[in-house]
Length: 477
Ligand SMILES: Cc1ncc(COP(=O)(O)O)c(C=O)c1O
Image (tube, rainbow, N blue to C red; front, side):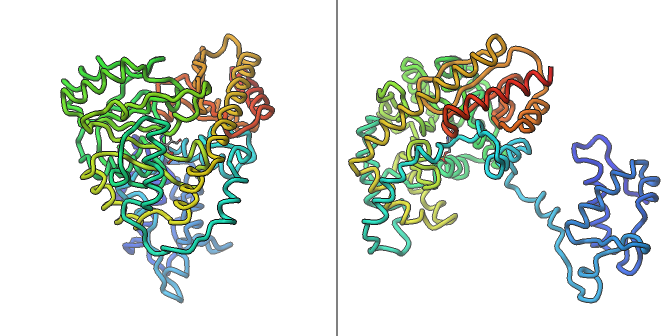
């Protein structure tokens, strides 16, 4: 046999073997009426453990390609070649061939545990059920007369909601805009995706914060964008670094999360905001301001938006209701120069023909309601209590072991672990003990950091979660 395993490849040996057999089934190397090679023979032939062959055969069996028959050995599934002559497509090859990259396996694992697990969840960047304004939303849905346009809505999103967002960003963010410069998106995430897909091309260089919001990282990779990272200190990124990077790599776009940054919780200082805008104007580099957290300032203060200082249209401003109302509504928006918004809107039409009208009506009515302000006040108070709790719990269980910045808003706390440790081992050990968090290396960060989110759990479970994390941390010493 000519085919060989590649022992230097990242792909596990069992996967390589499973693919080889799958290809052989498809191209007739392994005829349908003959048994497949035995596990022992394959192990001998490729000089691998028999357990590797067993895992490869397990995978092929789970995909319905082969069957194991007592006494006869392993054969090609009858459903493919046998009586019915049905062919199952080689899904694995399709899955791996797509140009849209999957999330990192560790990110997928955390996501799966967050959705399905019974763990204390200090990983998921969302509010707990009791922080959603359920009563007010119920009132809206029970009294709202949903008669009217149930067809496809305006390509930019519901006109009344865009009017409301125009007022909302003026009140809370001092941003002057108008409804035709706003596109309603499926959360801030879709806005980021549209920007990358429509305004950048493969090979373009962009600046991201280091560390930064991890669910946006694969979007750049999939689009073939070159990412350069600038470290975030307690005042955000340093504008001087930006100029140096631009001179070296011709930066096409800057992505920032300037207020209560995910994951560090820091604020980009006013001086730096002004300086970044100046650089943006001098070199003609657009800035994307991703701003889902600014209404969560524990002081109740209104935070300065880059977009509010932007007189020339250099900034694309993105926000959403996910962190202040409910992530399940999937309401986000992007504000920018009209031609840009129209370009993004055209792409959004190709993707989904616009956002669900029900959600837009609910979002509109809630933003317009008397309850909105009271809800934000209550939300911020509760988040502050939880922030205080996590700080207390970290000091209680991990004093002298971690350093952290105490955020004045947002939902994340970013901790540096003061000793060397194995990131995967700590995560596995924590999951075993019933707590999940986001390891720093999923956020483009150097080793040695973890992110805890304090919005999804209450004070009691936050404390217990940190206790379990501390147990895991000490167990791997
Ligand atoms: C900085 C940042 N941007 C964007 C998003 C995406 O949020 P959504 O799509 O739910 O609005 C998140 C979510 O955690 C975030 O932290």
